[in-house]
Length: 154
Image (tube, rainbow, N blue to C red; front, side, top):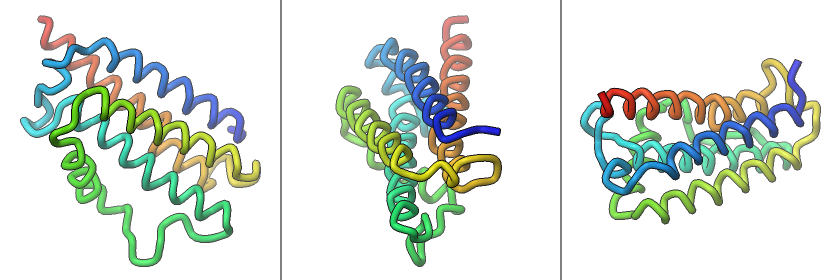
C-alpha cells in the first residue's frame, strides 16, 4: 500500500531522473520532432508541464473539498489536452520550457503535501493523479526518449 510520502518520493525521483536525461540533450535534439513527426522532447516537456498544471489545480480543488476537475472540464479527452500543451511549447526555448516544468512540478509536489494522508493509496484520487501526471508519466516519457536516443545513435 502506498502512502502519501511514497507518492511524493516517487514523484520527485522520477522527475529528477527525467530532468537529468533531458538536461543532457542538446538544443538541436531537443527541437527535433521524431514522435509521429509531430512531437519531440520539447513537446513532451511542455506536455508534462501542462498536465502538472491541470492536475495540480485539481489537487488544489481537492484540498478545498471540491471535485478535482472543474464543472464542464473533461480530462478524459487526452489528445485534446496534449495538443493544447504541445502548442504552448511553440516559440519557446529549452530553458524556458524546462523552467515552466520545474515550476509546475514544485507546485504539484507542494499541493500534494497539503492533502491529507487519506487521499492517497490504491484507487485513491490523489495517488492516481500523482501517477498520471507524475512518476508514471515521467518514467514512460523517459523510456521513450531513451529509446529514441538509442535508435538515433545506431
